[in-house]
Image 1 (cartoon, rainbow, N blue to C red):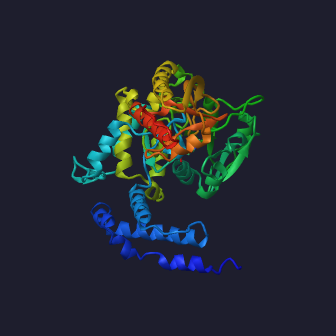
Image 2: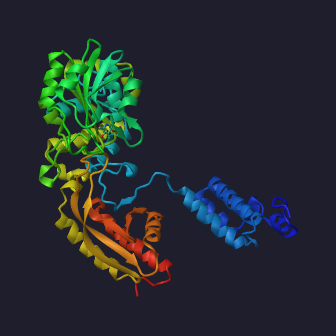
Image 3: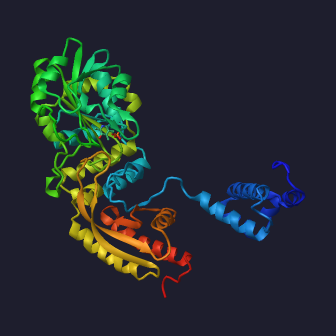
Length: 474
Ligand SMILES: *Cc1c(COP(=O)(O)O)cnc(C)c1O
């Protein structure tokens, strides 16, 4: 029998599929209309009927139960009413997880966004003079005070910042970059590509592992417009390596009347050495070494909203500001509100109020005692066993590559279910919980879990136990 000709039984079942209006007329669905709305219920019904049709045609479905269809329609309506973008619980221990939205915003930033975004604001209005102002004014002064720079501009992200700086300062000329810094950051940010798009010709200097000052000097010609240094964010070159100190590179650039640009990526504004993180370049020390323009992210170590910060010498920043492309890359009032509030926390020394900073500063002992308390609660749920072990959290988001923060992990197992299975169940939890699987153990790192999310983790394990046929609370 040819597979695309339905047999008699299948044809008969297909003819019995109820009409959309017939299903929606059922009392339970009629009363659900008040909650979900007519339109959502019609869509949900169509979706469920389409699945039914496919099931019958493939032979997987041998009967039609209107009561079952009704339940499926209600579930579908509930499911599609949920937002696509939703909060998740990050139990991976990766603080600046790009896939999970990088830095969670400080409360103070959320509050400013709420206050400013729902009303009119002085986004581009000078209240003193009663005339048109610039949106840069809201963060410019705080950046100047925090970094000691003459001026700072904010664009959509660091990729945009690097692109705009190169286009403003080096279009039509050459920019010298070490071969060891022609990097790719996740999501296809590649220095050679950004350079090409900006209209600046990339002039490579040195080798992958060693680039000396003399290599830069040899690459400089009358076509050179700038030197570019890039933080190799997500890898480390170890062994036989060399690159000139920043101050010597700045001296060389200035000797040739060229600006030195540095793409820092993360843009650390506080010293992380007390937490065991070295080598993460601090924005202020780059500037002190003589770098003329730095670029860095708002939502990496800074712990604020997605943004690309361009900071440095006033005359160069003015050229960047005058570029017509600035208009295409500028940020909106939500970002400015959140960024200003985040910067103010640094200014006031309240780094503990910045979640990303707080998570970096959290000691293994603090994480360990939280983990021990949570382990006790999970271990009493039937089917589960938990052990605590030493592990490592990482910064993520291209910060501090090859370095980690010591942590305590919960390693969870279930008597009959594989760790990958548990991982999937947690991921499909109403508030999704993202965890790691290693050697058939489910690993949870509480460094990136907010304390008020721990209860939801216990509840989720309880639901897994219930769905595995055990009464979780007996
Ligand atoms: C992360 C990173 C970028 C890209 O930053 P976005 O804000 O995500 O655009 C660029 N350069 C470096 C060195 C980075 O680490």
